[in-house]
Amino acid sequence: MKYLIAIDFSESMKKIIESIKPCIHDENDQVILLHVAEPDPDFVGYEVDTEQMRDIEAGRYHKEKCDLEAIKEDFKKEGINSKALLIQGAIVETILKEAEKLAVDMIILGSHDKNFMQRALLGSSSTGIMHKSTLPVLIVPAHSDK
Image (cartoon, rainbow, N blue to C red; front, side):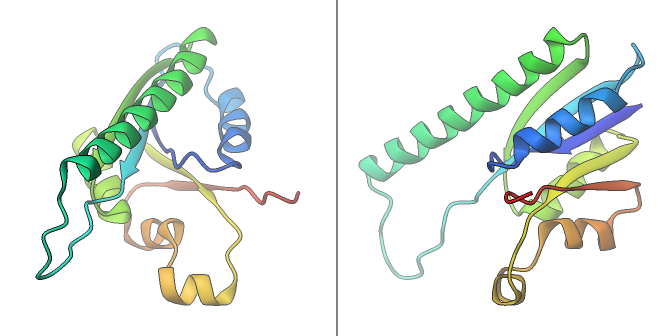
């Protein structure tokens, strides 16, 4: 099987990863770790793209890529074939597009506690993927207080 695991670097991500590892045991299984980086903000009518801002963004992307590579290496140490991707874009659409492009068998993501206002204003990536995906989706509850 080919699994796509959406990585968001939250505190609960370690729990999600550790709960998934025992399920991936066949030598032909492959794990694709995907982190979707936030797109650059659009500020209509303002020129805000300074060199300092570009350096900050580059530093953030570099750290995210290094963190993603570290997770990939943890999988490899356990004998799990893995690959890491960092792609900039809209979360739900990017995950679904990459899952299709990579011909994965299952999408795995975490579900985080959000209060009513957060869900109403921000939506939920896991809910969006669950409703739009044609592939099986495994949502691992990852409540930080449990």
